[in-house]
Structures are given as C-alpha cells and as structure tokens.
Length: 415
Ligand SMILES: [Zn+2]
Image (cartoon, protein in one colour):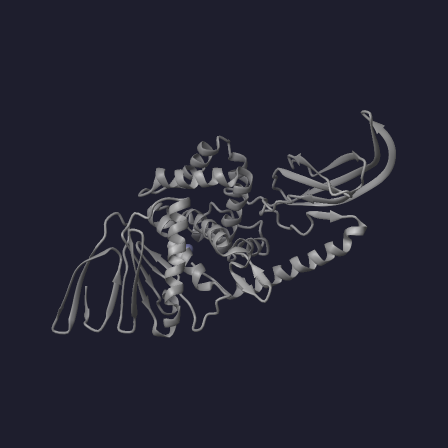
C-alpha cells in the first residue's frame, strides 16, 4: 500500500517492508492463516505500542482520546489472557487496535479490530473495555473458528458474547459494566435482561440472518445465545464448559464449524445427550418461567419415623411457557437450616411436602442463579409474612436494576 508520508497506517498481518520515497510511504503486510484482511490510514492517528507475551500490540488512536491509550491496552491484555486460559492460544504475533471514527468502530478483522470510545469516558462506565474485549473475542469466534456468520450468526456473535460477558464479569466484578455510586450492573445481567424484555419467544438462534423479522436478529444473535450458554454452563458446570471451549477450539480452529459440530463437541465433552437442550433453545424458541405459586406451613405435632414433627409445609411450583428445564428448590426453615429438592420441571406444576420441627420461612427456586433463561426471576422466591419486609426491598432493588439495564441497552450497541 502507498499512502502520503504523513499518514500512519495499520493492517492485518505483519509489516514486512516499509519505504518512504518522494513523500510517499509504501508498506507491505503479510499474513498467514487468515480468511480476510483490512487496512486503515490516517494523518491524525496517534501511534502507541505495547506487548503481551508473544503478541506485539499497536494502537492507532484519535487525538481526542489520548488520555485513554492505556485503557485500550489494558482491555486487550485482559482479553488475551482470559482467551488463552479458557479457549486457546492466540496464534498470531500482531494485534492492531484501531480507534476509528463513526460507523467504522466496533468491528472485527483478522489481527485488526476497531474499538470505539467517547471523549472523557468515565472510569465507572466500561464501554471501551466491552467493545475492545468483544471485538478481540472475534479473533476466535469468527477468525479462528470461522463459522458462517450470515447463516449461523449465533456461533459467531453469540458464542463470542457468552465468553465476553463471562470474562468481563470475572475481571471487573459485580460492577463490570457500570459501577456508579453504589449502582452496579454486570455484562451477563445486561444481556439477559435485554433478551427477556424483548419478546423472548420470538426468533430461534439457528436462523439465517436475513430471515429474522421485527428486529429479532440482535436479540437472537447476541443476547439470547449468551443467556442460553450461561444456562448450559449452569447445567453442566464451569469445569465442563471450559473443557468444552478448549476442545471446540482444538478441534475446529482454522476450520468452519457449524451448529451440529458445536453440539457434538458439547456432547462428547459432557458425556450427555443434549438434544433436549439444543432442540428447545437453539433450534426452537422455547421459553419458560418457573415460579413459587404458594408456600404454607401448618402445625401438626405428629410422630414420623420416631421423630417428633411440629409442622407440615407445602410448596407449589408452577411452570408457564413451552420450555422445560430441571429445577432445584431450596427451602429455609425458621432455625436457619436448609433443604434442597430437585424437580424435572416437566409438568405444569408440582407440590412438595415437608414435615419438620420448624416451619419454612423461605422457598427459592434456582437460588444459585444458574438458570438465566428463566424469563422472570422475581417470582422464584417466596417468604412467609415475617420475612416480607426484606423481600419487598429486594424486589424493589431488582426492579430498579432491571430498569437501569434497559436504559443502558438502549444507549449502547456493539457488533
Ligand atoms: Zn461481534
């Protein structure tokens, strides 16, 4: 490429030669094992360099964002570190971060990503980190694992969004997206609420991009698959999910995996038939909301298997929606002791009966917050009257967080 000498230039690959003659800068970049390339040039770029292990980092920054150079490098290093740990090695020796202008930002190309920020972006709002980490994640889900992003966008944007949310929350904690005067929002929470609040039963993950209607593409390609995979992680456990990510990378890097390949790896790593999961939440549009319908205790003063029993308590759980997911119930007795029960979740409702010395003061389904696909978590918990004040405060807090998440989603958007 030949550009005026005063232009700074960045491109996919490794700089092989550079020559300046008669006011013209001529460069040659070479890249192996990539399926696309991009280049950029501007007389305005400020150029910074850094390194992470075997990777030479280069940042081309707009002058107005000079104060944020280190934030770009820090975010890139966070992503490289977690991806190497959770998914696999970054096999290239260069990575160029471009702070473009306007619609060019927030986009991925092999070994070159465009980021995006605003003048005086405050530290408590991690918009720059999210977009940088998201686009860097595409080096894996798009670059190395080159699925067809038009026919199966969820394998590209969706799997990337899952790892992005997990990584950002692991690195930055409960205020990973926003952390402002006590108000905290996680990336996982923001994605989940965006899914549950936008017609969750419309638009399957496995859909060709051009066949989505009514704006379902974004939800079904980003927010819903992130939520689906967090739910799969809750079911399989993080150790299995992490082994899945590594195996998927090892098996399919530099190739073009499709949805059946993704499921095959998940099944071979977990040792489970996952048709029930993929049929409902990847190929289908199943949704569900499990709720505690009622919780009651009555005094019985009886003898059961030689033990004196003072109370019989009943918990009724209801399912709405066409989706089925296994549920765990935790009940807490007045003395603070707990008991767990499992339910397949298949029927439209179930009743669980407890005979105990103490009455139940709280019933909570999915208390570990693992089934993120549940479209309404506010009804997952019920307490008896003496616990109500705390419960109302908690509900109000959840509703406020939900509102703020929705506002934030309206004002952000990354690709
Ligand atoms: Zn993306």
